[in-house]
Image (cartoon, rainbow, N blue to C red; front, side):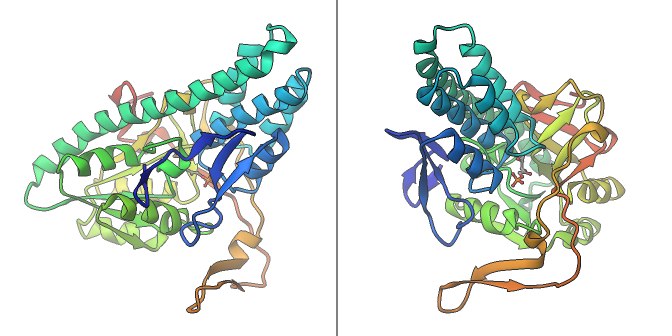
Length: 344
Ligand code: MRU
């Protein structure tokens, strides 16, 4: 996507490995970091320098390739190390499986090159999948806008399901970018998405960069906006959809789905097939990542001088589950690369 006038992907090959944006510093600093080993890739995923379900899959795929470059016998330990980096998004396992299955029967001296090639292909496929999600979602947005053509289509989204969470375009943002580019008037309500503020920091940064009209709202504002008729549809991304269609996504998504149902607002989930986990029957089986309470207890941001400051907002005990489950019955439809479907 367009980053300060240059067209970039969120991950790209370098001589020693790959470069990623350090998302902990966005939107204040645009800093590319080079990952040159599997250990660095695992750390970048675990510590959320990089994040978002499809993107952590891509980073892990390159991590495995880098491990094999150092030691072609390291397939299983490196796979385990990278898989352990974060528990919830199934794309991480999917991408590691893709690389492992691609190289495991090859001669040792051919493994690294083949792993890098598969990781490159995973990235290209992710871009194509998101483009296709965007095209199908665009048709949906055009239809919804046609029902009320005199005002912009108001879309509410949660977390960052954008190009920063994928290789390019994003999942839930792909239809938004395409619709904006093709002249569908729209406006996006961006949930702040506490505690890490992926909405306020990342989604808003992306939408601003693309010129999409948007407004950041507190996580608790969505229900009122729906009651006031200010939301035409909700589109969110997802980290894992189980066989019955339950949707695991950033904490707070479920409450938006409940409010949407109560107010007759359509609730859509945008996802590529790489996010479906048919091995799990329902959302109750998804491992929910428990993140450090520090994410809630401390807030970081720029002071008036421009310097970053970190301040404490509570000294109490903190519980910080990072994801929740939206039952399939609350989902109006799934926007996938194959089309918009009522079931998965
Ligand atoms: O904890 P994060 O920031 O990695 O969570 C990411 C999300 O919840 C995204 O919305 C998700 O990966 C799906 S959209 C690509």
